[in-house]
Amino acid sequence: MPKPRALRPDEIRRSLVGRFEQRPGGQPGLADRLRQLHTKFGARSRRTFLLWVGWNGDQRGEGEVIVRQRIELLPTPKVSDLSAVSKNPYSAGIMPVGSIRIDEVSAAMSEDVLSGRLTPGGSPLDAQTDFFYQLIEDGRSGVASIPQHYRLFGQPVRKETNISWSVLLERVSEDWLRTLEIPDGPTDIAET
Image (cartoon, rainbow, N blue to C red):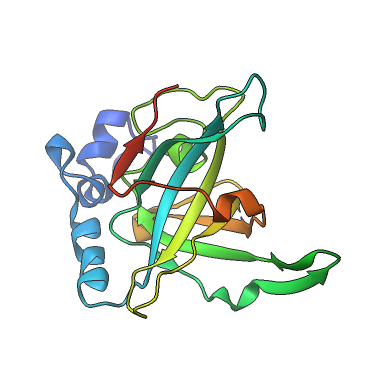
């Protein structure tokens, strides 16, 4: 029986869970290829994006909003029931309030990217950049879906036995996000 010890990083990549996470060369591992079947069968209706936005003014919140980067989480993760988000009345209208959980996020993603601290290319963020999760219905209703924006409510949690991440998100109600024009494409970057 081997003596108990922690695995070295090279051993983690060669472990059974490591091989399920990602194949050599950055190819999706078995876990992600199996999760893609949910999308293929039409069982995941909420597309989920990571969204980094900034401003072209001197300070955060000044000037025009610029989409710095937007990437889709693939395979499409499992979004919890949206009934936990309620619409509360306030003096200027109705404000959505509540939280949701997104499960089965690819384990190939890093905690820093899922937390919005780094972009997928590894670039650190400046003080004028905000980070959101954006959910959009996949179009099955035939009507253009209004994007819903969420902010990270806690640290992403790696679920080793599920070979995935889980994140808890809180609904964001800022009106400027509703009118934000985002070009199509898997990765959209605006130079600043």
